[in-house]
Image: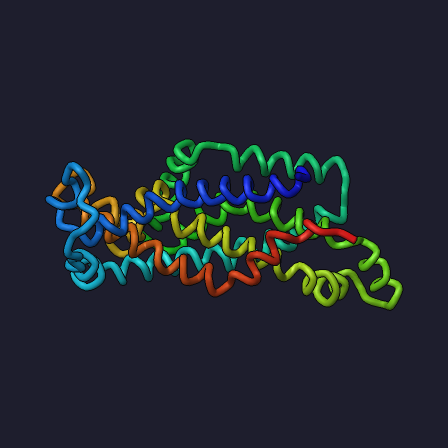
Length: 274
């Protein structure tokens, strides 16, 4: 038997085991969300039960879930609309202009991204309070852009590095200026990378908890903060918390499925050559 023939079944088994391991918490959360608390924590676990969708109805129609989702969506969209264009321009420049100053700038961005959020949240809170912007969208969006900008710059730079520089030179010979080379030649080729960067930037902003806890309030509270207040410390409310966790996941799941083709294409850029 050839080594490659044996490797494929082994790889399939390992991937299946990994998928089961990764999906088990999600499946378990779905089951808890449609169980009464007495059934959710029964020992041994009850796998056969009558589903109860009361907790899903409660979070969507009685717990301001749609309002919190709108806040999260607005902050995430604002973050993407600001950070991705800046990251695209900076990533293209850093991929084409390779100088010691550029490398130092990239390392500086990486160091900033490595800072624990708990070290940055206090300065952001002090600045937002000083300009009376606590519980406003601009304050939260500005914080998310600052946190996500190093990530978007590095990711977009990696995509632009996969685009041959000879295309820039050919467009320049044909009479294009620097902006036309970027807008008409390079940017269309980098579209899958832009989609991937936008999706990851959206996820980072949508799931942010610590900054949302500190910078938002009653008017701009986001879903992660709201779900934390659904009584997760009381076992009697865990079904409600599980329903909230499923509810916060569903919009992103639908969004990712809609852009799946662009996401896969962007993630596989440069994987196959020749």
